[in-house]
Image 1 (cartoon, rainbow, N blue to C red):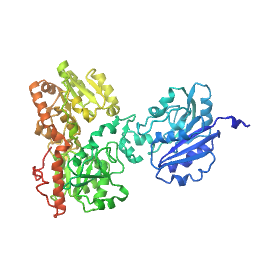
Image 2: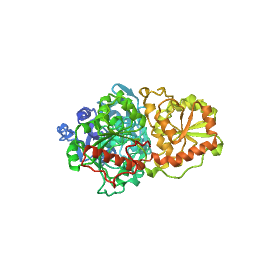
Image 3: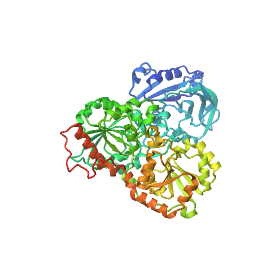
Image 4: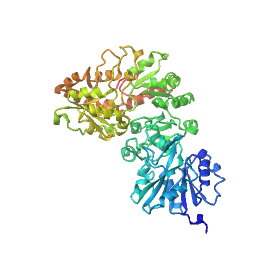
Length: 630
């Protein structure tokens, strides 16, 4: 019996999804190990690349087993599949995009066997091209490639339970209860840095739930929580919007192109009105660019590979393309295919960022070649009209991602100010324009600032620390609140902040920037809760949110915090504004605008094809020759 025969065997799990370009390097790094008592279990988790061709020379190796899933099941399921196949008591991991150095397995086994209390051993790693770390990389968890552990009955968390980038939550925390983790102190492997790493696809802000679902072909609703973002419960949150709705014979077939951004469930209002929806989604969404498959409604996704054929089969009435700058190239591609279907372009954020990202020409094409345009504000429409050719195109004004009616609940909470006699204001998102000194000035007037959003807190950590030191007791940090609790949570505050900035366009539209043209998404949030809206007094300037709030009497304008304090102290005026916002809040509900939007679509259809008639039955009482500001 040789010395090698006395060494314990290791089952090495290799999960792989679309990593054909990396896997040869990973396998070769295993074959040259000084420690040769191993089996390799390759789990092809539904790869769509040429993986099987690439590894064909290895599948007959006596120490290598290969298993393939028809569809991607997720990392947890793939690893559990590997654990079930594992024949040995020691488990190590070699993701197909990572690399062992020749003494990796030997050093891990030596450390694990130093004491019976050890349940897991881990190496130091090379990472991000040429960086090195002893043990766990700061801000991360132990990586698969650096670990070996004794086999237990524990299983990895699977997709149906939770999607997360955090391997501690997925598995390491479970076995940490059964023994010690021991560090080798040796750099013996590489965690390879590249754009398709799982954590990058999962974790906001570069990844997120929408890039994740698209990349892995996930159709099911998810529980989703990363180490950076807020908990997303698609299963529970979207439950009210999963009912079947029978299409009305007089309803439209609407193809939604691009992405839906926030409050994506709003489109169910189309189905509730008898219309049939299809989705042709952009292929590289950001985390907040909501794309299909959608966890609600009955939207049929159109595969990109044969979208023109499917469009011809569906014979839709209208193509409704939207919404933010990331969708511009894709929407333009679909528009230029010239399907003959009326094409409506709905744009929100934002023209200047399109310039910054080199998409200006594509954006101008959408505004000049589409059959109709929907602008998020009247000011944005007029800004474009300064330089776009006048072709008498049809336009409409409607903010792009208004919430659905189900969230407009009536359960309000008593004001905090009635308890302590001080004013309480809220920021449901980024405190744009509010500097630490502004919070100090607010504190002098006994005005508190309540800041919501776990993900946003991470991005504004230094701001929070500095502000709390400068204005102790007046900056309050709260976790994220989802739509079903907006009214109950935010109605306890005296007022809510819009973006706080000083406009410098001097009433000249050509000088306007994005702050001047934008309706912040939080307008609908604050309106839903009946909150007066706060913003700097930009009298004499062109500011979209200022015009909106003034027209409908929704808020306060002030030059400094002292003036704000005086206005907040006028209880009669504050009560009038608060009641007015509450009475007008449905202006910010998407469902309220669906009849007008459908009528607009029908007008576009009639203009594109004069044989299309707008009947009395399908018309809306509101005349569309008048642009309505919501």
